[in-house]
Length: 297
Image (cartoon, rainbow, N blue to C red):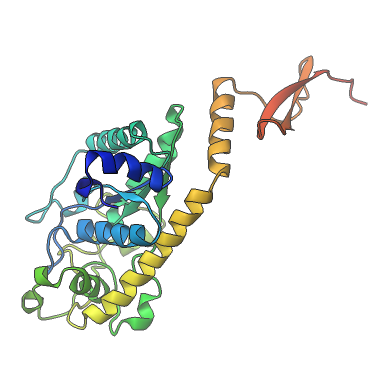
């Protein structure tokens, strides 16, 4: 179900029909070599989400290009949004979805550069009490793609990504505009990466032209296989999240405890000890006082 295609009455019914589960497909606008559209990541995430929602009902948010994209700001067509703004906007959208009755929201990224952003967004979801949950669906883009590909160096605008684009929107891919020669990764930043560090220029140090590998062997047939695998994984994730009750219980547990932090282990000091007991009636863990501690022998 696509949010933007529904009428007002249909929307209200759709939230119920999908068990309050929504998907925000997060992409960006950035170059993909010289042959693929700037909206490649946005198109891919939205298409995969829509295909999955046809098999397991979920409400898909419209195409969303407000991810993090600082690594591409040196090339024409890149849309780079300030970091505080992308967090605030995604928070605003999630709150609006909650207001409309969503209880579970899946973030699906079509852009590799969103990984740190979305992981941190979900982690900091705990800053304030919430009555809904956001999940970051870390589904691989090209599961087992190496077996299908004829080239090495899969990464950006490569054979695999070119193939998915040829399958999803062939009219936007200009194969005649591909660079004549393959593009191996730049190695200037390898010493820093090999020392387990990440510099601000990490992406640029590998893919300064936003192209790696060789897109020429890309085909729609390969893309269909890769996309169908990703859709399969997302369908499974939607089903798991619909059935997930543990996360909600643990979030309430955590939020209650965060209001009055206590030591969950028996203390060696003080007049009272605290232990954690499971209360069957509310299915949560609660701190209970066990009274004055006995003298240690």
